[in-house]
Length: 79
Length: 218
Image 1: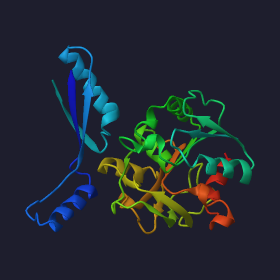
Image 2: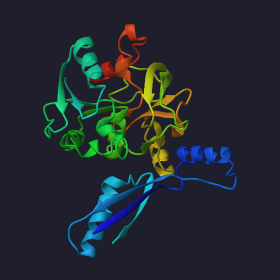
Image 3: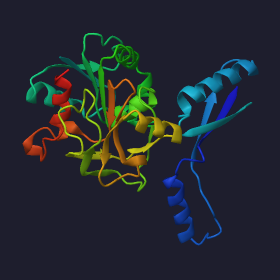
């Protein structure tokens, strides 16, 4: 089973990296890009086929390690 | 007083901390490899600076799960002293032994230079040798020292006098110009600047010694 996890900064957290990318895009001529925020994409491969159990595990993994819940949010897809 | 300087894979300021404690202050000091789960023989644990686990995922995120950190957590629960410097501060926030988080510097640049710190609070085992309002000059060397916490946490930090050091001239965008904080119990201290690099005249400042000498008074 594959899990795709997306970790993003909470909206209340400043993202200077995103801003830097936006400025670069502006320099390149893409002035219509209003905002950029950067996040992380993590792929995990799990043993087993029990989707409910896998979901519990992934949620725990996200909360404990993959995301710092003080500053980040996460969402995941299981297939 | 017995000091334990924890070494994670990627720590690189462990020797400087050991040097100040052992050779400048002549105290009983040992290195503690991150796999050691029992730190009960120490009075004060030092989490040094560096790039534990290469800063992979997030700075301090993986070091937090090293066996030694369970020992450090128990040690802190008993009221014993913990000081986390730079990467050590990051590990303490990831471990939730200190509140908040350290983000990428606002400028996105790694900043390596001396800063002037203002002593905000001396009522703690780490700052008693300093005077309130005093300036301490110490170097910083970090890319992720931008302190962040939600409004509730910031107001608690202020209410409980947990902000011990502030930057006089904020180099990284830290909220409230926070350079160093302690926990509610005042036995765990985290700071981004390096006091171990300001403990000998040859390095340009001995203001960092005030922190180590304060610890010795306990």
